[in-house]
Length: 299
Ligand code: CP
Image (cartoon, rainbow, N blue to C red; front, side):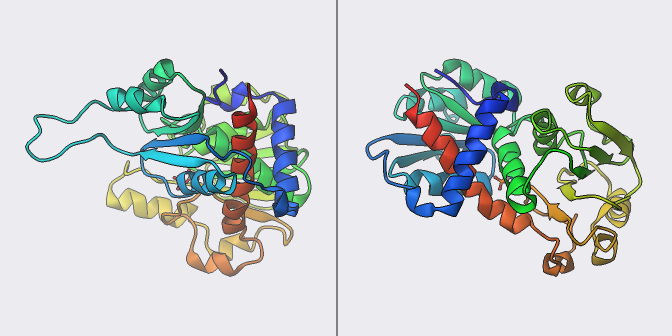
């Protein structure tokens, strides 16, 4: 039994195979066939999700499998207390052949992983792991720019809690960028241990919103309510991507985001040819199909 718990569970061959398969599927959607009729995939999301949950749901449907969903434990007025999440998970995990699991609490996620009788794909856990988003991001970069290795990549936001950023930066060990520019206010920097995994990449950390020469701008956002209203306004003023600020990017650059957008990208930016975040989201479906195909085929 093999889980995809962390992007580190994959080696470069695995990642390349997934990206290549997603590319085949995106170029020739007729290759997506109902090959898994009769199999069941559990979508167990103990935290809100739009793209990841529905992207996997669509992938399951296109492959001919069925989805069962669990989002919260059963509770009705009059009940003494709800069933525990772990009991709910243990009861239904065995109904499926594969589980796609998200939980905001890392410990709760790991408890479920320890109890599952079947493989699990991590759809986002705690503030550190979002391996399928990293694959979506790599696939979007390769699809839109033709390569990943050797690019100049900037990431902006609260990098201390962005699990998408942490997984993506870790995944750069497979395709080292020429430059990695991490732009975050003081106190919101990426934990240094992650950079130790990509020692050959020219990495810089700064507070200044400096976008010149980037090939990829990744807007990770400031999603958590960690600030007073005034502090949030300052953050927005300094780190929100406006049309004016986006003009500093080369015309060939792409702007990505794991989404959802809160207030880190002005809506006017959506009209720029560099805005690629909705296309990134669309491309994600092919990675999810490739992942489900690969995991359901495993003996
Ligand atoms: N990027 C991402 O994980 O989006 P959702 O929370 O909508 O799944």
